[in-house]
Image (cartoon, rainbow, N blue to C red):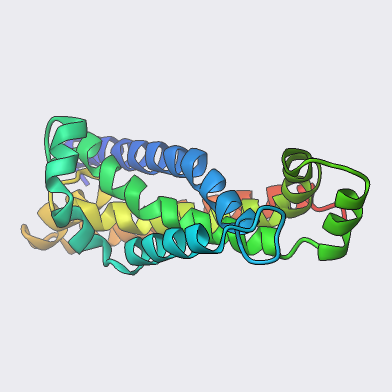
Length: 217
């Protein structure tokens, strides 16, 4: 493989890191509160708001059920508004983030719902406020599961980022399409696949290790 291709590989890998890192960070910041809201406003929880919870749940499900490639095209006006363009690494972060937020929200909600209801009731009986319950009980108890959920999200984003490359998003997916497919260079395509597999394995291993370290049960 030529020095030029190796440079392209490195640049494409950095672009993928930027896309996954930025979208994953934004999705974490916005998705965890979303999961908390979905949980605590659910029926029988500490702040039940059935109508609001059902409406928010429908919106989250609608976003989650939209195929990523369709979502990318559908929100091009929003992408141009936020990023100033609809192509490139910066532009790809917008649909990646929008796709990941509801995904994180549902994963966080699932982790929070596994917290023992008896523990929540005991803390409520001691006079704890909803905010105290969230900070002192829900998040600490669900943290290993939340980390597992965020790991799954990052792995999914790696796959989505490769898909974004097919429509001008940059990164390893773009390199694989332009060189491996369009220029009939199977060695480049194979190398892209190998790099993505190794990347996923590293992310998954780090996430599993952190989750085990946080689990004190």
